[in-house]
Length: 208
Image (cartoon, rainbow, N blue to C red; front, side, top):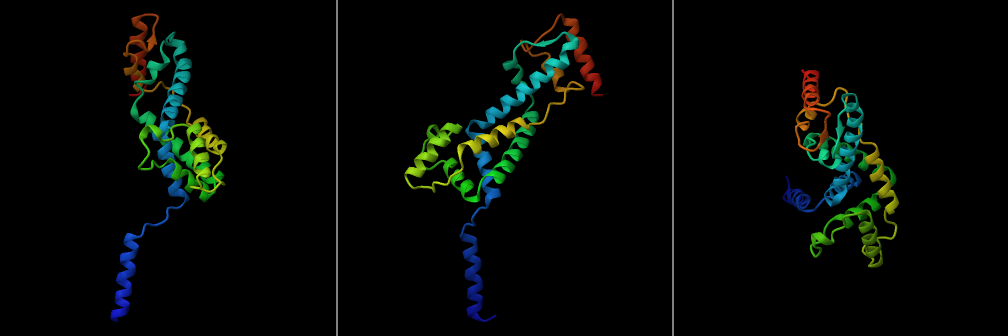
């Protein structure tokens, strides 16, 4: 290989290693959903999952005369895998909606907004839809991004749709993890101890 060509090959290879590639819309929405989950939307998803399980378990436990005494306490022992599965599903739906409704430039600008600048403290980072709207307006005013940014209504609509489309909990048979939750003080109200013991045996028997 001629020296000049060899130099050109080496130079281009080195340049490709140090020049960052421009992320595309798919990469942008994945990072956007990650930022939103870390900025408080994750708690909304967890609360929605817990409420959905509480609603369905209320119906499933009615024949046993057992009721959920404390919905907030009920949410705390939910297994991590239950929450993780629903968060994954939420992210997929949210990303699909944003890709469908927003332009590549809008996604890029939204990602820039959500990424915490070095001079910004964690307390100042956008943590709600209203915070995001205020920051978008501020960045437009300061000419940091174009005025054609993603409307907050589209973002809120995508988040709402992703939450509403979370899978319906499977409670028939009653999930096995509920067997251990029956023993957590204050979560359930039983007519007597015999009912609790009998229900636990039935749940465990259904999963053998």
